[in-house]
Image (cartoon, rainbow, N blue to C red; front, side, top):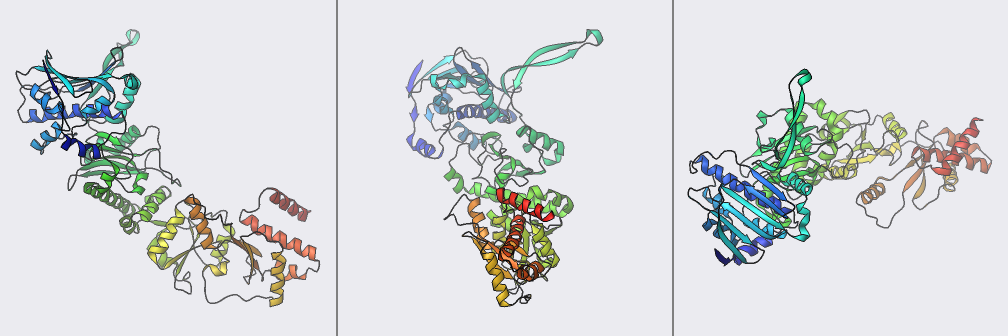
Length: 621
C-alpha cells in the first residue's frame, strides 16, 4: 500500500480554471462518461493498429446506481490504467491524458477530453471517489485509487480481472438527488443520448409472442437498457439518408413538434471540423425564440442549447444539431466570442443557410412562395442583423402584394417605378399592415393604379427601415399615412370646388368635434369619389411609436397622432354640409362623418360604438 499527495500544478490549473469553469453540478456525469468514451476510443484506436492482443469485442459503458450503498458507478471496458498511469493522470490535476494521447495519435483518434479537470468534477457531488482499473496490457494487475476530496490519496492493488475502469462515487448528503434513478435517466438523456459508445443503464422489459393459435402466448425478457444512439444521422453522409430519416430524427430531438419545412446537412472538415443538421421550422408570424433550440455537441457529447455565441442571432430561430470537436466542452462566452474557429463556424453556417434558400428559390419558385409565410420572419431578421446575409438575401427575399403576388425587391422596384416615383425621384412602396381592416385605403390606392404590399409581420417595421437605409432610392408609405393623392407626392394637385372662406368654415366645424393632444384637422381637395372624411396616421410618428413598443421602451409616452382630413370636393361636404343652415344639424352630420372615419380605423369602441350604431339605425327608420 502507498500513500502520497496529489500534485496540483498551479501553472496548469489557473489558466484552466479561468477559462473552463463548471456552473452546474450535474456536469460531473457528462464528464465521467466522456472520459469513459475516451478510454473506449483509445482501445479501438490501438486495436485497429494491432497493438491490442485478442478480440476486444463490443465495449460498452455501464452506469450503476446503488441507492442503499449511496454510490453511483461509471464502468467502462476501455483501455484502463496501470499503476504508473494512475499516479501520472489522477494525481496531477489538470494534466490531461486525453491531450497526451491525442497528440500521439492525432491523425486517427477522436478524443473528447482536451483537459484534465473533468475527472475532478466528481468531487462536486461525492465525499469519496474510488477508481478501480486494469490496463489492457498483458500481465497488468488491477489498481485501486481512493481519495476523499483532500490532497491525500491511497493506491493499492486489487483483484480486478476485466480490462477497463470503474469510477465509484460515494454521493454526499447534499447531492443525494443523484441517487434517484429518474434523475440519472434525465441526465443520460440530456448529455449522452448520441455518444459513440453504447451506454447501459439497468435493464428494460421486452415482450414477444410465441406459438400460434390457442398456444400463442406473450413472454417477457429482460434486456440491456441502452440509452443512446451511437451513430446519429448527422454523422452519416447525406447520400445515405432519405427524407424520412431526417423527419424521424427531428421527431427524436423534439417529440410532438410540427414537422419542419426542410433542412440543411452540414459537413465540413477544413479549415475546421463541423457536422450537423439545421431544420427550418414553421414560424408563421411568431418572432419569439422557439422552445426547440439548436443543440450544440462536441464529438457527440451534449454541451448546451444556448448557441447565440456560435451562430448569428437570427439563426437561433432554426432547430437542430451542430457538432464540432473544435468547440471545447467547457467554455466561457468571452472565449467563444474571441475564438477564431467559432468565428469561422459562424460564417460557414450563415453561408450554407443562405445558399440553401437561394437554391430552393431557383429550383422551385412556386414551392418557395408557398413557404414564405413561415420563412419571412427568418429571412427578414437575417437581412436586418447580418450584412453578408443581407447581400445574399436580396436574391430570395420576397415582397407580397394584397393580391397574393410575390416579387423580389429589385423586380418589384422595376414593376412600380413608373407610376409610383415621386417628385423627389424616390420609388414609393405603398403597404398595409392589415389588408382587411384597411380595405377602403387599399381600394383608394388601387383606384389610382397603385400597387399595395402586405407587411403584417412583427418584424416588418425594422425590415422596412433597414431596406430604406440600404436601398437609398425607396421610401415605404403606409396607405393610411396620408390622403391618397399625397401617398405618392406629385407636382399636380386637385383643385377645390369651394372658396377659401367655405374651406375655412368646413375646417372650423370639424375642429369643434376633434379633440385630444395627438389629433388635428386638415382639408384637402380630393376626388368626389374619395371618402368625405378620413383619418390618416403620419408615417414618422407612427413608426417611432411602433418601434418603441416593440423594444419595450417608452419615451415620454407621446399620444397616438392622427389627422382628420376632410375632402372638400365630396358632395356631402361641398353641398349637404354647407347648405345646412341649422348649426346643430350641421354639427350632427359632421360628427357622423367623423365617426364613420373613426370606425374605418377601428377607433370607435365601447359606448361610442353603441351610440353610433343606434344613430345609424335611427337614420334607417
